[in-house]
Length: 317
Ligand code: FO1
Image (cartoon, rainbow, N blue to C red; front, side, top):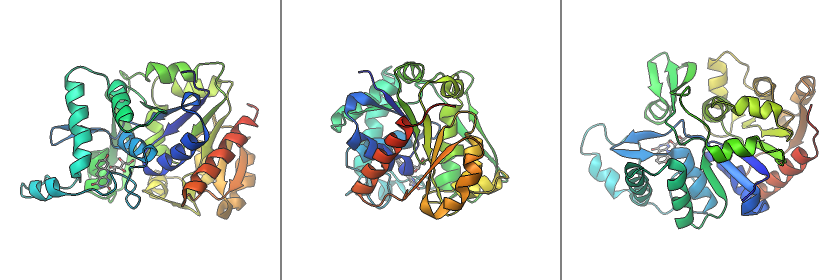
């Protein structure tokens, strides 16, 4: 395997584009590096929400309404565990449970997260390479007006209600990007890097914070293109726009472009945000204006094709 396209991805929003990319590129052409800052131990199980979401989405097995978890899920385990106070805020479906049990046991037996993810992908019939950003522990912590919260406590248990003051990544000094991810980032044959439409501060930033990743993006000969998760000043999914406000930024594509400006060559924004294009281009970042809302499978494929064409056509600054 010698992929030439690298995608960085978080959960539900990003996974839609990852699916489009997987329908556009051969398995040997694409590597998807996935955020693991949301991972946590819950009820004794190692949960990797973004890896699960990308995996289930690529397998065509994700629940289409929620975007996370499996379609056709049943919730007997959840109903049973709800008897024990405080155990049911994070919903694990009966079938989904098998993934977490398998992963937890394999990790306990000494396998790395990437190896376990490969076995899970094989079992789900996914030929494309889905890789955790790191095999090492790294935990996204949201500092809020209600104290420091691990990601899932902030996101699911408290439904993003606490005001975000800052975000940090525990153990980032010790964590290393997965060697396959690091090698591709530094490979001169790399043709493009795509930042999927995931939350820049909560889902992409953990990946960028790993040693060598941001410098690698700056010095790579491959163009780097992001698809914005913000449409009309709002996030399509999740709290990205609110997070931006709470972190003191104006929620919009310009602030995202500024945040990525040290390595970004191109930003894809929605037609509704066309008015932002000129200010973004002033930063030296090319803008492509398209429909970024992915409703159908064809939308996912079209956006993936447009993104690849745009990226490969760009020259690095
Ligand atoms: N998201 C929710 O909003 N509520 C849940 O109960 C929930 C359970 C869950 C279980 C397994 C899994 O892989 C993902 C799950 N998610 C749930 C999604 C997840 O917490 C978030 O979408 C991501 O962490 C954000 O990228």
